[in-house]
Structure formats: C-alpha cells, structure tokens
Length: 456
Image (cartoon, rainbow, N blue to C red; front, side):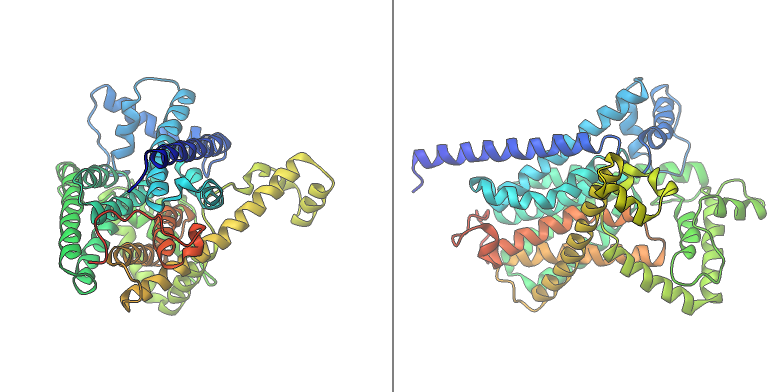
C-alpha cells in the first residue's frame, strides 16, 4: 500500500519534472526562434495571406497546401507578422510540452530527477522541430501523441485517450499529406496485432485503430469535397506531389536527367507544355507522368538514387541546433578556415562550431534510434519482447519509419520529412527499452506505467 508521504513525494517529483521540462521547452524554443530551416518571415507570410483571406470571408481556393495551417493562422486574427511568429511558436511549444509530460509520466521518470535529466538529451530535436512555424511540426507532434495515446489506452482503457487520439487525427490529417501514411501503418498493425497479442489487448487495439482511422477520414472528408468542388477530382491530398517527385531526380550519385533541385525547374516544365501552375491538378498530373517516364528511361540510375536517399535519410540527422548560426561564413571561408577561426575565439565561428558539433551528435542519435527501432521491431515479430503493448508500440513506430524511408526514397529527400519521425522513435524505443533493459531507467525496479494492461 502506498503511504501518504510517498504520494506527497511523488507529487513533488512530478512537479520538479514538469518544471524541468518546461524550462527545457522555453530555452530551446527561444534558442530556435530565429534558427529556422526557412526564415519565419518568409515561411509565414504566405500562410498569413491565406489566413487573412479566410478571416475576411474569402473561400480557400487552393489545392496546395492543405488548409490546416492557413486556418490555424486565421485563428490568430489580424496581428503583425512578428507577433504572429511568436504566437505560433508559443502555441506549438506548449502542445509539445504537454506531450513530453505524458511521455515522462509513462516512463515513470518523474521520481528520478538525475535519470530524467540524462534522458532529456533526447528531447532537443523534439522541441527544436516543434519550433518550426509550419505544418511539419504538427505531423511530428501528432505522431508522437498518437503513439502515447495508443500506449495509455492499451494499459488503462480510459476513453479520454481515444478522444485525444481522435482530435489529433482530425487536426493532423489537414496539415500535411504524410499523415495519410498513418492509415497504412494502422491497418498493417491491426493485422499484425491479431497474431502478436491475446484477446483483450487485440480488442483494445482494434478499437483504437477504428477510432483513429475513422477520425482521419472524417478529418480529410471536407478537403476531399473542397478539392472536388474546385477541380472536379476528389483529392485526398494536396497537389504538390508531382512537383516534389520531379525535383527529386536531382538527388543521388548519378543524374542522367540533368535535373536541378529547385522549384523553378518543375514550373519551367509545365510552362513549356502550356500549363500555368505546377501545383494545379493538370500540372501535378503532368509532372507525375514526366517523372514516371524518367524512371523508365534510366531505371538503374533511379534505383541508385533510392539507395542513396535511404542512406542519406538515416545518416543526415534531424533538425536540432543547426550550424546556420554562422551561415554567412559558409560563403566567405573554407571549412578549415572556420575551424581555425573557432579555435582563435572568433564568436561567430565558435557558434558555427557548436552548432555543427550538436548537429553531428544528433545525426548519430537518429541513426542509432532508427536502427534500434527496426531491430526491436524484428524482436517483436519474433515474440521476443515480453509485453504485448510494447510489441505493438515498437511495431507501429518501425512500420511508420519504413514507410517514411520509402516515401523519401521514391519521391524526394528532405530532412523535415525525416525529422517528423523523431518523436515517434524516441517515445517508442524508450517506452520499450525501460521494460526490456532495467539499467535504462536508473534502477532495478520498474516504475514504468503499468496500470491495467499487463501481458494479456
């Protein structure tokens, strides 16, 4: 029986853990405020234009991008770009903070401050990616939340987790097209779960699948009708796939197509065949057809490109604290000169060096997480992971990782697409390994959340 003083101690430790994660969130959010893949003013200005049109009652007349982020911007109202930038950042970091608190509680680390501080090293790319003012951050947080909801639901059978999962699906499916891969992962996992779990866990899994997939289709249904009304074609995604596909041929060790990875290239192609926009339905279809013809012309080079992209995706790292702090140095100095300037104490060169070191560290971390997820997934398929819930959690993460690798290999590599899988991998691997390997939780006795599921 838990004593009152122990309950009070646990509450104090949980408060400490929450404050610690909050400070980490605020610090990384502030650090990444001006450290973006694309400058915030450039990234948000188009979304703000669409958002203002929505505010003023103008119908959203686009098939690219998906309308989730423009509507989010519209909710902010008519404020300056600078305030909008800060408001969106704060909103996203707060949601990410709540997700991390759920993860800490599921791990049972709130009672071990020292262990929690060590594990917090893994959170830097999570908060950094959540600081991106764009829909990619919502896909990353959505995937992480869905996995946590799955875990909590399997163990507690509390309906609140189904509600959170449903709302998350409805929102995320309107942000970016990658969420459609969630359908595939959930359906595949439902079939695999039949063979890897016993009756009660399998039933709970089936209920969760039904709720999330139904929520995703409910969420995308208005967009499908919107696209059909505009174009006469029921689209389940935005119309930039052809553009991305066409540009992707520039990546890889060979480029017999002489393609350049630039948005102007697909636009120039559609212009040459009399189509005004590369993200129109006609432009999208033309670019897809041209890309398929390119594959038929040089199939071996395309296979090499796919292999190169997969290797790049696994070793290219994730968005963390990048070396763009000293971006202007890249055009005025060589790498060896920048290193010499850093050792000489030149401030900008030193920040570049720190950013580069951190970036390389998380390249190694992501590579280890990806291989670990695939390895644990293989163990789960062999029944070598004890708990049914752990098997399902790691299998979902592994399947979504493989799906993401396949998409970037076939279409086009971008580290933002891969970074979105990082929270999913962190949550899945940590939740499984703290059960499988007690050393990882800083002691012998498990404090991982085990409420009602067991290994049924």
